[in-house]
Amino acid sequence: MSLNLVHSSPPPDGGGGGGDIVARVGALEAEVKLVRGDLAGIKERLANIEGRLANLPTTFQMLTWFVGVAMGLTGLVFAIARTV
Image: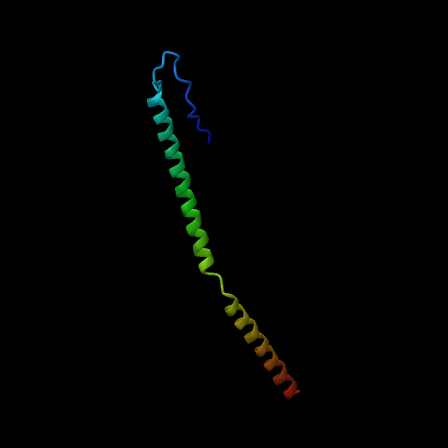
């Protein structure tokens, strides 16, 4: 994305120049449309990432799951050892 808004130096007769202002504003409007499109894409991707992060388990949930599985397996081993 290239935006060239550099205008030429003022004319030597001391006039204010800026005769190309319509073209420059048109270029700005076109760039704003592109930026808005890019921003909409970024917002969509960010919402997707936020949704995925919301579904991740917390550290406490993972720790609880691991402790529960470990205790369940330990209980199973002791139950099998008692019956043998």
